[in-house]
Amino acid sequence: MTETHPAADRTRRPGAGPARRDLLQLAAAGAAASILPSPSAKAQDMSNGANNFYVSDRVTTQKVAFRNQYQMTVAGQLFTPRDLAPNAALPALVVGHPMGAVKEQSANLYATKMAEQGFVAMSIDLPYWGESEGQPRSLVAPDAYAEAFSAAVDFLGTRPFIDRRRIGAIGVCGSGSLVVSAAKIDPRMRAIATVSMYDMGAATRDALNKSQTLAQRKQVIAQAAAQRDAEFSGAETQYTGGTVHALTAETDPIQREFYDFYRTPRGEYTPPGQSPLHTTHPTLTSSVRFMNFYPFNDIETISPRPMLFITGDQAHSREFSEEAYRRAAEPKELHYVPGAGHVDLYDRVDLIPFAKLAAFFRQHMA
Image (cartoon, rainbow, N blue to C red; front, top):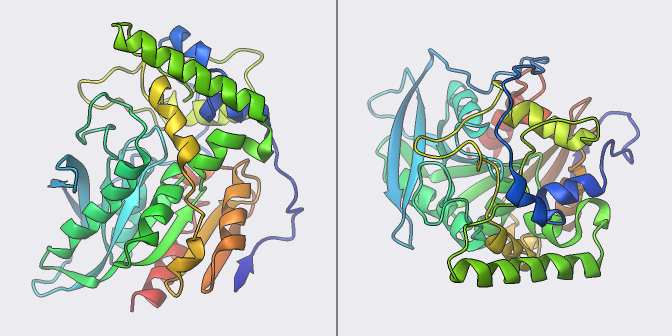
């Protein structure tokens, strides 16, 4: 049992509160109809080595695609060390992107950095997002999301330069809870790490710090049900949550944190053929499916496979990593990154503990 953290006050959660509920928990579902275009402003915070679109001359990369058990194509980007030996049998990692993002946002960076450390790493687009199949776009489908990680293990295990006995997984933000869900029923994932994890189920049901009431939850469910009726009768698809497209004097600190990544050149990315108006926004009618998502139930059954939970000590989301750590069985580790917020660990290479991740996987996939 390991818990590593700075001496800072561990009870502090700057910026946490109902505002994030509006972001991911649908309490502001009605606002979906008023999504605005991205502003032309290019202001961004590139401190602490922010480098989401990092490219390494020590790594080779190629696009790949494979089928999941729903017979949908999952798109991936495979990163390998440039000095890969002809008879290599390397350990491999599958890397999942934040919820509402795509592999070009955070996941490719993590995969590149882990390939520099000697791993084969593959980022994936979750079904219904990015270049992966699935209609309608931006659908919430927790089971299909988790299945994508197992399908990635299927694919990696067939590569001749990968040791299929040494495959692990990294989930960033929402993918943290998705990879936990997948690992509970897929022992081929030998070691699991999460970074800035969001429990998408708890976040949708309860909001940050359990700030959403049962009455509010029922209101969200009712709004989604009413929209299903409307869309079945021909109404346009409505989207919800996600990141605002413009800042105002009233924009809360958490939304500003996400805006700086998703709505500026620091991390903004729109997949080909898709609209920037819809990036990060799930469909309103499907988002309530997360209310039936309980990734931490039975998390202890992943043991004796090891788990590493990484969170910033200033992250508004740290409650989810702390809860997963509390409920997980040994071996487990909770690692706090001093001074880091939630989105900082998406791309700020001077803060992200890549050496910690590499050591964890080397130790447990030896």
